[in-house]
Structure formats: structure tokens, C-alpha cells
View (tube, one colour):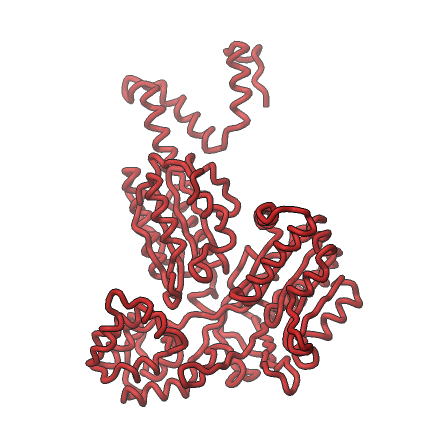
Length: 601
């Protein structure tokens, strides 16, 4: 719509100025402007127009809140969306975006910023926070004036660099001149209650800064439950099938689970994960009860209003297989032994780290007895058992009301005792068709098929990392997507460990899967891994990237994903005739375009 000079009280110059600025205004800016113009007619009662501009500008800016999230598995993203709903219900204008999609130079245009960020691996930012994290810690980061912020940090206290990414964002924003709306909260794996408390505090801080009355907030409820079944209210799902995918004589045991979601209303997309709340091994619980001379039927309060027999609480509520530094510190006053107090004293961080490696609660109670206090006092220091996330291995459109998982059984020796993965061994040894599991869907927007079905995809998934690519293929087959697809799969032996072999061959024959390359490390004298297959096809792989292919990696982060990442860089450097820095920029640009995605653990 163009303002015409003949039909308005404006001269030519004014009309041109208005025609340039009006199309650039947002709806909220237009609304504010109309209010300002109306208010300017009552200058005698409310002050001059200039004063009103200043007052309304402050009001307009401070009512706008930006929420940036850095999320690897979807937890931070989910909390960001729920926080936005709560604040929008209290008259704030909220913008929610991934750090990867945020233009860093816009930081100085923001007055109220909330950051929700997880920490990945050994203190690293999640993939979609890398660019923003790097910018904020560079010399290009702006000085922040009249800037208010608060940080919610997600992490796992069993890792040495607990909530490191959130801590770094928090300290850096302060260094740049920002003022905290509310102190940073560091959340462990059971983050729902502290996250809700943080949001209440942020809401109060924003309201105080505005000088407005804080409405009665439903933040806790908003963060706790989004739908009928969720992380905080899991669905009791029936197990339909539980099959060992490995052949006789394999060193591995990989379970294929088919689970019914009928009646749950739960939905998911390829790339999402399923959370399972597992139960501890009954043998381990009995051993703990015996070591502590506890009565298994003694009632203990696990949380307000929830009282259970001690054995049941240890089986299904408390984490007993992982030790953390905070747990050692809380346990020290409950033992008559002074050794634990000495271990947790300042300066012994390396000794604590070494002790935590590969030990569980049985080790703790044996190493630092005798224990004092009641069973209730002791269990009160334990964490709630966290859900285990598994990449979904099926398409909902191909398998209505079902979800499939691929779970590798974890067994190993450590500190003179046999150890077992909590959820994987429950699945392998104690779960039968007809049994129920407590499950929830964890959406992950950072690991998704391209929106354009013609986009080529390259999938790298050794071992159980192949799970989401089975869902990708089922979805592409179901939707008749015609984009090229290339799978790199690896494991130990061709004969016993080629997971879903018949399905991959069927998709190859049909054309749903264009290319398949495999690496079986124990079938040859020299071990061959997926990164070696990538190098063998270096030229063609780079051609696919140049055509716009999306690249996906799923599986072990410490070794496989790290090695594959470096191999991809090497291929881009070689085939693109680029320097290492240019190759890294190429891959970073792919990540920015969501063409390089990782689901690593």
C-alpha cells in the first residue's frame, strides 16, 4: 500500500519517507505507533510527545523477550518453547529460536535475553550452539548496554564439566556488560522442578524491571506437562516383540524392540527419540539392602506425597549405578569413616574423578563403611533415575501405533566387578512380550530428514547408530521420496552383526536406498571402519555434498563421530582443493543450513 501525496496532508518528501518505513514495521510496531500518535494529543496531562516516545520505547523494548536455546537431544528446545508459552500468557512478546538460526549481530538489539543451553560430551556446547558460542567468546562480541539476561543450564552431574556451556554463557554475558534478571540455574538430569523455579524467578525479574504487577504464573505446570503423556507423565506401553538381532557366536547382543503406543496419542517423526524409565537390577538392589542391613519393607518418602517400600523405591525410583561428585559430598556426613571426607576435600578433584570412574553405589557403601543415620536419610541424597533416550528405528506412518528401538546390551568389568547397563540389560534379560515399559517421546528438531524429498542424504551409522536411518528409509519408502540415499554401516562381523541386513538389501533393490557401503572391523587382518569406506569414496561423496546432500552421523561420540568428522573434513579439504580452515568453514556452513546433523552419545 503506497501513500499518495494528493490524498494526504503530507508533502512529497514526507510521503516518500513514510512509504519507505511503513512496509518495514512489524505489527507490534504499528500498534505502538498508533498508540503513541493518539497519546500525543494529550500532552498537557501526560507530558510532551518526546517524553512519551521515551516512555513507550522503554515499555515496548522491555516487553520483548528473546529465548535462545542450544540443544543436542531436544530437552533445552522443549523447555524454551514451554517458557515462551508461560511468558506470552503474561503479556510478553517472545521470540524463540535456536542459537544456530540466530544472527549474532542482532544481540545488541536485544534488551531481554533468556538462554537455555545443555552441555554436550566433555563440557562442549551442543552442535546447534557452536557458532553462537564462538561468536560470543570472540573479539567481535559487542558491549551490551541496557541488556538483561538469565541462563538455564542443563547437564549431568556425573560428568566432570557439569553445565559447563551454561556457565560459560552466563559469565561471558556478564563480562560484556549484561545484568542478570535472575541467577543462573544449573539443572541435573531431573530438571523439571528447578527449571520451573527458574522460570518463576525470571518472570518475577522481568515484571520487576518493568514495574508491572506479576500475574499469577502457571510456570511449574507449563514446564511439567505439555500433553497427556510426557517426560513427567510417561505412558505404560506394551512390548510387542523383543528380538536379538545378532547371530549365534557374536560378541554383541542387540535387541530389536517393537512397542505399542495404541491409545497414547503420542506421535513422532524420524529422527526423534523414545525415552524409557528403566528399573534397576533386582540382584543389585538386594545386594545394597544386604550391605546396609536395611529392611526392604521400610517405608521411605521419595517426594512429597509419595511414600514407598524401600526395595520398591530402590528398584524403580532412585539411581544406584552412577556416582557423582555432589553425591559423594552429600554422603560424607553419613559415614563414620573419615576417608570420604578426606577424598571430597578441596584439592582432591583428580582423586574424586578417578574414584567415580566405573563405580556404583555398592562400591561406595563398601568402601566407606560404617554408615550412620537412617535409610530415609541415605536415600534422600540419591538422584531420581533418569530416562534413557534411544533413537527411534521406525516410521509412524509405516507402523501406525508402534515404535521400534535398537538397543545394544551393555556388559563390562570394572574395579573387580561385573557391570551391566541399567536399561539395556533390563531389555535383554528381564523384558518379555506382554510386559510394560514407561515411555515418552523426545522430539529432536536437530536430526530431521530434509523438507525437500528430492534432497540426497548420506547416512553414517555404525552399530546401533543405524537405528534412525531405518526410520528414514521407512519414511522415504512410505512417502515415495525420490532423493538419492547412501548408507555407511559398520560393525564387527558380516555374518553375525549386519543389523537389519535383509531390509537394507530390499531397499537397495527397490531403489529407496541408492548406495550401501559396509565395514566389518573383525573380518580382516587390518581393522576397517566406516571412515575408511568414506575415504575410499572420497570423490563421489564430495560430489554429493556439492549437489546439496544432507549428511547425518549417529552413534558413539567419543571415537566414531570424532573420527568421522575429521575424515569428512579431510575429504572436503582434498576434493575441494581447500585449506583446513576453508574445509572447516564449508562444514560449518553445512551445519548452519541444517545439512550436517549429528545424533551422538
